[in-house]
Length: 142
Image (cartoon, rainbow, N blue to C red; front, top):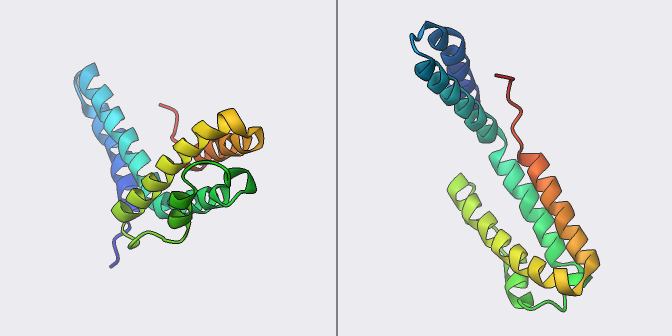
């Protein structure tokens, strides 16, 4: 059997919320059980989409770095080097490290764009909106 972390975490979270929480004798324990359940559901969702979302962000950042509006910005050599490489593996920790490198470059580029390129500034804000939508959690109402 191949373990499916997302499914396992979701099942455990639902078991905790539906079977354990109602049996607790204090409001504090019930609240903690609910919080743990929601965190497990969030982790389940992210485990399913983490690599795909990081890769989508990376491709979007590379497109911003290749934008003609970004060319005059300082750090073009660093952005070019970033665009020419990729994560060293598909392990999530490696994906996160490469993703974080891109976000650092994006933050610097955004600081420059705010003062020098309205089009690039708006494109970066659009990326950030897309990024947050891509990574939001869909959790049941408590």
